[in-house]
Length: 291
Image (cartoon, rainbow, N blue to C red; front, side, top):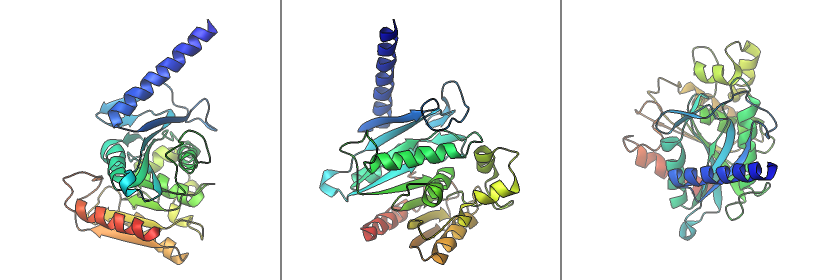
């Protein structure tokens, strides 16, 4: 009976991976771990939610959806992608797999990370991101044929906080970071309060908030970063990006920042964003100069 149950569990897992692979158009799907097998649990239970298309909530397992670089244009780079969603859900289309496909088309292996929501456990998304980086760097099994010597991280909004979090406090840091309108500072009146409430809990202390304000955590080992945002962002104030940029420069780290006149928040790789061609060119040129 145990063997039958184990077989059914494995078959179910394979079927779910195949369905996700088809939906997101990934070349390879890898489960990193779940709340039972990861170092820490986020305390959430039950199935994932999707109240709107490609808005995934209640995530309790970390998954990688990998897109192999176009062999004819392969740059030797790889990027872990952290979608945004306020640390409450994940916007996996325009801030996830669509961005991953575009990177792959331009010779960069990409892996969208469906990370577990923190639910007041800030260590959880960080350990997911770090494990994803290790996998793409070939230090952990599961991505043979998709690994790279230079692995960076990209993040949007709260996913940008996670990308900067891994860049400043991870025990395995990315080679570079790509930050789209990132949540960085937790200072009252200048932060995206919802992201910090989800990360630390609504009863967070001033000391906790300051600790996870990542402009305070930049050091001489923080990797180079490019920041892309809009001047009229009313969801995550641009000061988050400018503070992170200033902190990088104070440490003598390489940094580039592109502030577009309009567009608000959450544009990702949307066709409707007026400066889509500009940010794509800027990003590809910046990545080319990293090599």
